[in-house]
Amino acid sequence: MRIGNAVRLFHFPRFLIALLLAVSTGALAQAPQKCDVNGDGFINQTDINLIVAARNLPASGPLDPRDADNNGVINALDARSCQLRCTLAN
Ligand SMILES: [Ca+2]
Ligand SMILES: [Ca+2]
Image (cartoon, rainbow, N blue to C red; front, side, top):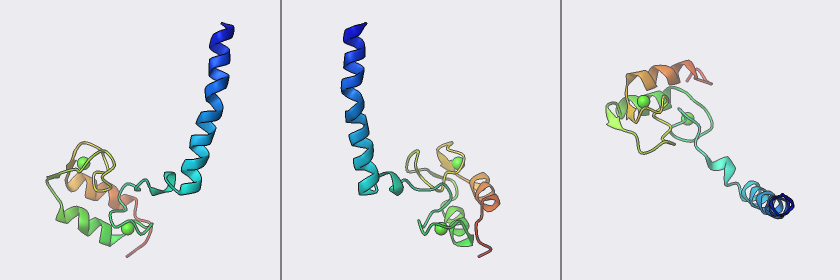
């Protein structure tokens, strides 16, 4: 038990260092927001149009902002879901 606790204490600062590095380099801030296809920080008609243009295509991966429901396919349900999340009228 003591050795296990010592090991956990030893690794905790490494985790903090990695987290601080990620935050300071902006690595965490670069994760794409679902539905914000063009990455401008807003969800609007431009993003919806990009989703509709990619309709029925496979998503590029789990972080694809066009695949709002994460089912691996970009379709009308993603466009509708993103319409409901619009942050700007246009
Ligand atoms: Ca956008
Ligand atoms: Ca989808």
